[in-house]
Structures are given as C-alpha cells and as structure tokens.
Length: 102
Image 1 (spheres, rainbow, N blue to C red):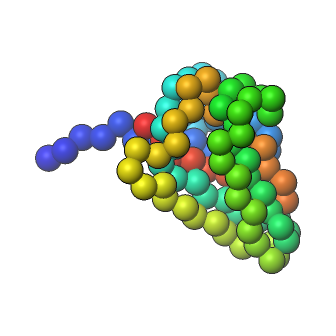
Image 2 (image 1 turned 135 degrees about the horizontal axis):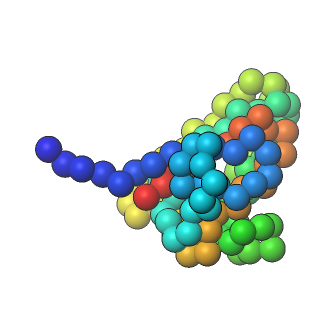
C-alpha cells in the first residue's frame, strides 16, 4: 500500500492558504496538484501567488463561469506547480477556492 503527503486547503476570500483546513499555519514550500472553485457569478477568477500576498509571483490564474454556482476543477499533471514562499489566493466572484498540494 502506498502512502501520500497530499493535503487540501480552502479559502473563502483573498487569503494565504494554510497547512490544514481551519488551521493557522501558512503553507511554506509546496507543489499545487489541483485547483477547484465555486463561482458567485460570471467571470469568476482564482489567482495563486508565490508568497504571502498578491505582490508575489503570479503562478496560476483561471477565469471561468457564466453564473452563480458554476464550478471549476483542474488537476495539474506531473509534479504540479512549485511554490517556494507560500501560497496566496486572490479570488473574484468566487465563494471559495480549494487547492490540493503536497
């Protein structure tokens, strides 16, 4: 049986992703393997920055949705996207954003 270090983190507004849902410790170095979002309206946007705020390097951006309730799910192949300074999420027209990381 194999083991994995894959985890999930959720934000409900612009915020730094934490090491555990409801946790207080920010993710440091990690590879994002998946991104999901729930739109509150048309043209929802999720941006992921390498760092503790939106001044970091933009590493991921997705825009989707035509109406409230539309969802986005993307799984990132191979090694995922490397974040070395933390993961900050900036969301627009989006109830929540979820990442899968290790």
